[in-house]
Image 1 (spheres, rainbow, N blue to C red):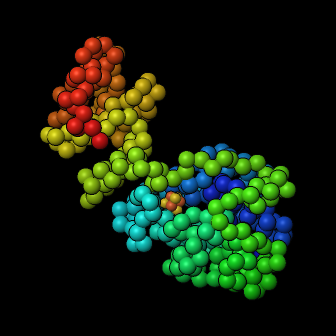
Image 2: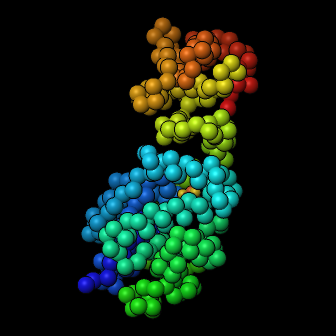
Length: 317
Ligand code: SF4
């Protein structure tokens, strides 16, 4: 029987290389792409992820955490991380633990001999120090069962290496943030890869300011994925009357996006017909008057726009 590995595939260069390195050892590789509500930190373009798996002849599994019930499970760790946060709201250790647990379940189902990740020792603070990696895999019940081919020679030998399922001599000893070695390997294997993208929204200060404010208001209530999507869209105001939100589109494209998201969210919506102004969606009907005022002052027909806007600026999130 051929050895089978399940690779946690983010779509970025590192996990692309891991697929190649393991295939070179004649290991049967399957990959799992775990779609997260705030982006996966590498490649958020699913088509790109899918294309690579097809080119390499790898079976791709997708675990979608942007929809219930996994969405709710993930949001729990965002609200109450056990291992703290990074520079912003990013709970990287808890997030990695979540990813490993989900991959472990899948690995057991497909009878993979081991899991492999594209993690590189010391590449990212918070979750890629040796002690953190070991702690996370222990907590996931995967002690010694996660292979990190790019840094394997700098890490304790895993079960798969001890059993001879994978040849440690052919694994690498990459460390740190520089990607020189990975870029050389990409050339050698002729791998196309995406430029490191904006990645995880949980690391972005402006976004997290809105998310934090949102979580303070929604802490005890059920959070919907669409509400999370809205945080990176439009201008947000908090009503002093109801404490609910009013959101205005910034341009035509965003107006349409608001309309589309609202088909699921079912907030109240105003699409101005008589004046050229932004679409507004708002949760509480008691905020209708305020929503209308906001539309009016953000209308391109409003001459005293700047002066009026200031009155409402204190409601802005
Ligand atoms: S940056 Fe941290 S929180 Fe964001 S996806 Fe990566 S591990 Fe998870």
